[in-house]
Length: 209
Image (cartoon, rainbow, N blue to C red):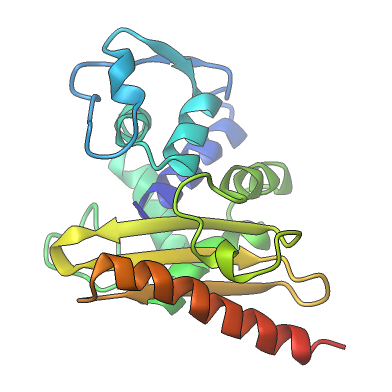
């Protein structure tokens, strides 16, 4: 699920270059349909949705059908260029297992926040799409409700991995935060990540002038 952020960035880069409009319609195919995460597959093949709506489904609900429809629009080179830019291994190209650390993954959100890969207009849209996703609000549970969080959660069942990464918009000191758990029961991870997030927020808040 965390790998959906580079897909979003790649799609927005196509929009920035004039190769695609966010209002363009994409038709779902049978191969796109995936019931493992999200409900978009229920609409069935032949359904047409705008690029922007698919982006929101992919990020806010982590919908796999939306991801499949969007990744069809991209070349391997377009996706790889995002990973090259931020300096982390591209799991779509490298067949051997690659470990992406929380620090590494934060580079994706830093590239959006500082507009180092996308123009500000598209970076701002990316942040808007990732702000307070409607699924698995983990980091945001550890901060006051008025504090916005731009983030993306991820689950990798093979290693009992649960993660949430993004930006916490503390009023005085916004900060990047990525928390990943491994080999831990999902329900325990689900409780642990908000607690860690709260401890970090309280520390930042206490030390902010």
